Amino acid sequence: MQAGRPPLGAELVDRMQGSPQAKKRVQIILQTLAGEMTIPQACEELDIGESRFHDLRKELLQVMVDGAESKPRGRPPGPRKTPTWPNSSRNSRI
Image 1 (cartoon, rainbow, N blue to C red):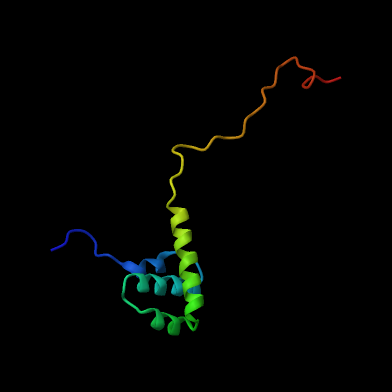
Image 2: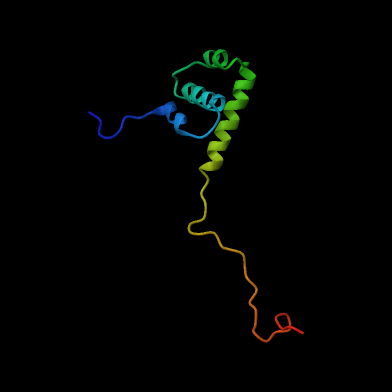
């Protein structure tokens, strides 16, 4: 018996923001990666050729890899502010 929630797999895509067409493409590509659907089946479902399917899969995987890149910890530095001095010529009125 497994503890915790059951894995949702490609169904997680339904919770994301995006058009129904984009979600369907992502779900089908994930199903092919999981071995739940063959590439010819996916191409038929999406009404695209295998070449276009491979291009879509490559684009999706690249976006995933880019999103998984390490980022610096903490808050990003804000813009540097130039100090203003009370009696400077920039701040005085003539």
